[in-house]
Image (cartoon, rainbow, N blue to C red):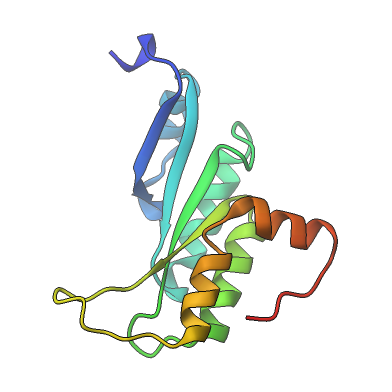
Length: 137
């Protein structure tokens, strides 16, 4: 079924540790518009590295996207921004996902909101990095 479709988007956020060579081979046979990966904690970086090494051979940065969970647990804006930058350096277009609890009861600071806004717009952060500007949240 998928082999007959165009512009396929895998928006669910693949768990990076589950990306195998066989999965990459199956994905290569499809007409992919975007593949979304999940980067939920700093401990997942090694899996993101592995996944981007495998997928990056066949899919460019415009097709490789990455949900980056921020604001969870003892996270800080600085730690979150480092993870977002790392996801970008690894060849994905990161998308900041600010953590929300079941009741949506967490009130985030303006710094968190600005960080989320900036890292949810690839055209903006790509322009900033292309011009080698410094982003100040």
